[in-house]
Every structure is written in structure tokens, then in C-alpha cells.
Length: 132
Image 1 (cartoon, rainbow, N blue to C red):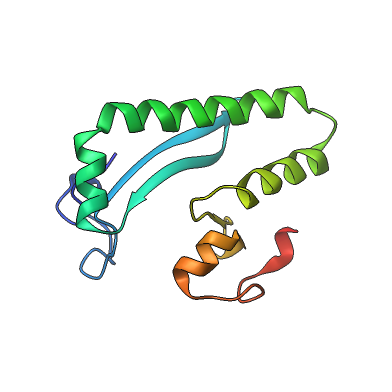
Image 2 (image 1 turned 180 degrees about the vertical axis):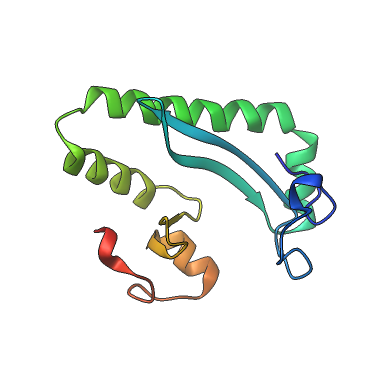
């Protein structure tokens, strides 16, 4: 959890902290079969959003953990194979009203939902679609 980006100790070694647009970040790992398979997070890009996260830190933290738990329980229900898990994951984030970017091990965007594309002013296909 970072409530004041650029000044938080977690941001200390970041080479982009001077140009960082994030005001606050709240995230929790998604742990599946003892491995981190992703992160569910809320990011504040405006002072108003930062204030809202700071004022409701416990509620937002509980919410992010709850979403992570739901995601893991859905993974456990649908152990029909990695293709089904990937399809379920993509369907879930495609239908979220928050912007979502999926970043691969190579630090490249593998998937962006419609909301993220709208926020970023980007078009589908302007990222590496190899994750599909």
C-alpha cells in the first residue's frame, strides 16, 4: 500500500518517481497454488482519488482482498485447464468498470480492457496481443 507516491519508502528506488502519475496505490497479490499469479489493485491518479483511498483505507483494502479471494475461488472451481483459467480471467477483467492492464514478465502490456484503453487514449491492438 502506497498512500503518498514518490514520498513512500516503497518508491525510493524507482527511476520513474519524478514523473509518476500515481498519487496512491493499494494492491494485494492473487495467490494460487502457492504462487503469485497477479495483483488486484486500486490506483489513484488524482488528488481526489488519493483522498478517497486515504479516507477509506480499511474498506478499500478489504474490498481488494475480497476481489482477490473471489478470483482465487473461481480458479479453484474451474480447474479444467489453463486455457479455461485464462479465458475466465480475461472475461472477468473485460467486464470490470475499472481500467485493467495485464503486464507480462517482460514488462510489456499483454492485455488492456476497454476502460483502460479509454483512460489511456489508446486503441485496441496498440499493445502485444500475444496473451490472447
